[in-house]
Figure 1 (cartoon, rainbow, N blue to C red):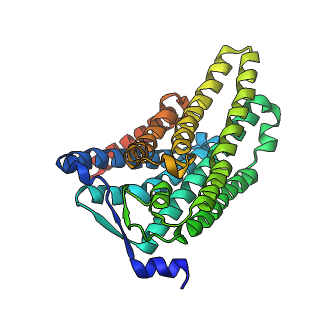
Figure 2 (tube, helix red, strand yellow; figure 1 turned 90 degrees about the vertical axis):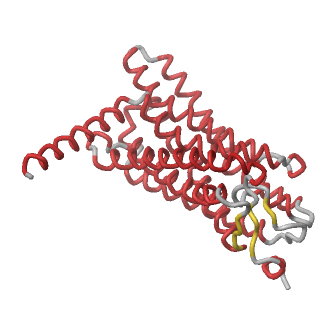
Amino acid sequence: MGPWQKNHTLSSEFIILGFGDLAELKILFFGLFLIMHLVTLAGHMTIVLITVIDNYLQTPMYFFLRNLSAIEICYTLVIVPNMLANFLSSSQQMPFLGCALQMHLFVALGGAECFLLLAMAYDRFVAICNPLRYTLTVTRALCLQLLALACLSGFALSLTLTVLIFLMPFCRSHEINHFFCDIPALLFLACSDTRANELAVFLVCVLILLVPFLLILLSYGFIIAALLRMHSIEGRSKAFSTCAGHLLVSLLHYGCALFIYSRPKSCYTPEQDKIVSLVYTNVTPMLYPMIYSLRNKEVKGALRRLLESLAVQDQAHTSTS
């Protein structure tokens, strides 16, 4: 009998402990994170909507932003609804395959987001450092290819990692001291030698996190150098406003992920990991639409035009009824 069958035979489910030690604060946390989740969904859906219908936002930069928001919506839906249900119960049972699917989708969507952030950095690099060739270089076909490559790479690496993790024997315990099926929490439960699995996690982290992050930093090194050579203060300000949001989002996303997944099993601390995971699964996704819109005049203008259009339609409907 193989490890997969052995795991499934020993226990067909995991128990997600979540925040069982904070029973007196569960209702408060449930309300707080429910509001944050709804704000997150509303923010990203708004970005998807305005970048689809607004004619002024039909550019590669907003094509990537739209798909980044779509990925964020799926990313939060994989984790947050289960987390909210966990707040209302002392423990949450999750089927073996359900846990594997959650981890696979979480890593796949997170990986796709990492590669998409790199594609967005490339878009800004060409736009600012080589503007005369921008329309010839960053074509719609290239954008579609980069999006497909980001998604396929994320899902392929995630599938490989998920299979390696769930082939391990979890004979020590099936209680996951986390609010979702995360890689470090599952490695901690394994009763076999996990050095090969930890090496696989490290290699995937290098491919998904470290390499894209270093390339993004390199591209922004060239971008900053180009901005310093720019004579137009207005042009420099506009370029900075479009790049600052992307750079801040990249720092938040890669910073949290590198902290969680680049450490060895011996450094695993469940309570600390749960706090950091709450940040990158709830707080940062909620902040992304605000970061992109607050400093971006084009997004704010598109949102204003959308609201004005809705107001006109509402007045027309009222006058005819």
